Length: 249
Image (cartoon, rainbow, N blue to C red; front, side, top):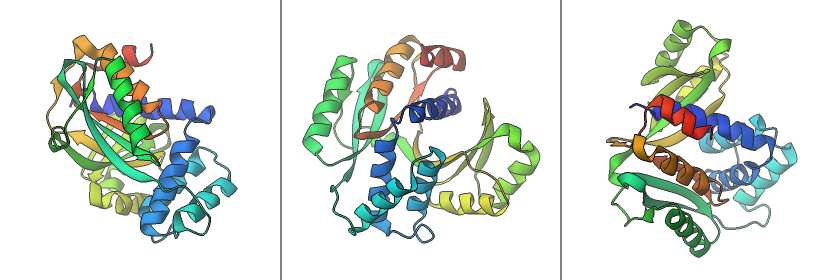
């Protein structure tokens, strides 16, 4: 899909920039708490927690913060009761969106999300009206300059990856959603350094959005500025050059 890998690369670089300003800590801490609550506090036995802790470590989050978040998730420390919720909506031009949130107040979250959507000419959608078009998969990013493409591709495929591509400075490894953490483990056993590994929702059908590119990207970025919103997935198809230009504005 045109624009998908480019957008994954752009979002990852933006997240790195946000991390320098400490903007991602709140979201990662929530992710750790929910992962520990749902799967326990042992990173060896809980792949989702291990992935969240790896994110925190890569963003230089203090170890004490990570440990406190895990203990809040397991109930060893008193903490906030977070819920994982998926909202559905539309951006200008009929672009469908899944809005993934982790919140301690659903009323606040939906009010803030609706406000941003309305402000940017989007709208909330009924449950199920958008989600049918998205399939969950795993996405692993590895920095290009550190590895030989052919060798990494063979290691990734041997570990169970479904696809291998490249975009900007990254090799992008795609996996079945259930196999993401197994593939990450297989890569790590071969000494491969993972820059990021996430479950994400990939659209099965896309909508051309070159004419609405600026509006769509600005809406997604505004939603992701909300503390409660973890990720936004959209089924746009935007030419790479237009996408990169708009995202840099």
